[in-house]
Amino acid sequence: MVGNLNHIIDQVVKDKGIDRDVLVDALESAVLSAANKKFRNTRDLEAHFNEEIGEVEVFEFVTVVEEVVDSYKEMDLNEAQEIDPDVEVDDSLGMMLEAGSFSRIAAQTAKQVIIQKVREAEREGVYNEFKDRVGEVVNGIVRRYERGDLIVDLGRAEALLPNREQAPRENYRQSDRVRAYISEVKMSAKGPQIILSRTHPGLLISLFKSEVPELAEGIVEIMGAVREPGSRAKIAVTSHDIDVDPVGACVGMRGSRVQNVVTELRGERIDIIPWTPDPARFACSALAPADVSRVYIDDDGHSMEIIVPDDQLSLAIGKKGQNVRLAAKLIGWKIDIKSETRAQEEEQEESAPDAAEDSKAIDDVSPDDQLHSSDLAVVEEKQEDTVEETAPDKTED
Image 1 (tube, helix red, strand yellow):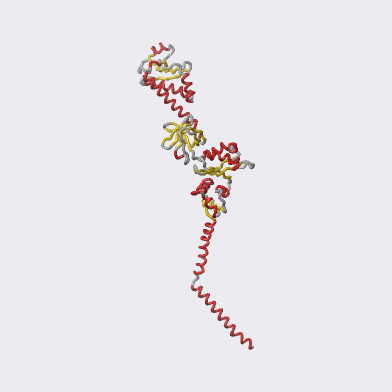
Image 2 (cartoon, helix red, strand yellow; image 1 turned 60 degrees about the horizontal axis):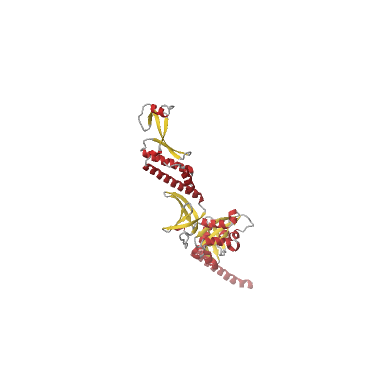
């Protein structure tokens, strides 16, 4: 159908990055489809690519029989022996067909099948390339907006940055460069779909790993990260080397390392917190810069009550509860913050019912008991009068 196909195959493999065997299989399937369409699926055909001459050869196979019933798939023994003298009954005889006998419509069908196979191979190649890259940060170029979603060119493929995964107050124009986190890769009917995110905590972690050599080397480890995109974030770090300060390593000289991350996140404020296995101490660090007076832990309810000085309450809670909300997410515990004044008031309210119960217990003494008490008082008075009357007689004696 075409001259030497080896050059065309090599060029497509180079341009599209498709495996050569996949493309050869696509060519064989395409030519076989065209041949079956030409002969209306009445014959037993096979297609094979000849590497030496660079052509797809089509073979028709017939069964050698003594008496022909189906002339399309069977051949008389005498006729078959004219082609191959050594053939016997029940043997399968293959004969190569001339490709030129295919019509133009059949050739067009072959072309469509080849295009489809190449497209499928491209999609499969893109999916295989990116499916193992979930969790990586990639660089791309903004191409266009589609209903608020951003289409980003990653080179071999286009990715989607949904509106819900875009940080507030971030605006992009066509041809702008953008760094984003690959959150999901899935295969859809239209091909592989790569979902990006600018709000995922993984973006924050990856940016720090690219800026802090100690993180990349494993000396310092990130134990957790939470974000309210575009506003504030908290990240907990620990060191596996006692000589390395994890917070200082992430901050860098004069804050250079953390400042690069803040710049990439368009001014998002980042709190770097030392991690500790003690939840109470970890909670105190997570609420920084606020000071903490006392911490009460409920292990069963996985919650804690934190008491802070009155002047530190607003700082601990943060704007619209942001600081305590991020701290709770970071440590994974429910946090209830109270000022010292409020805590004292609640303690007094709890002790007040106890005093009231004691008073009530006194009031609840029975009338009989009260009468008995007064009777005892009268008896004591009478005993005193008796003593006074008998005393003068003793004097006279």
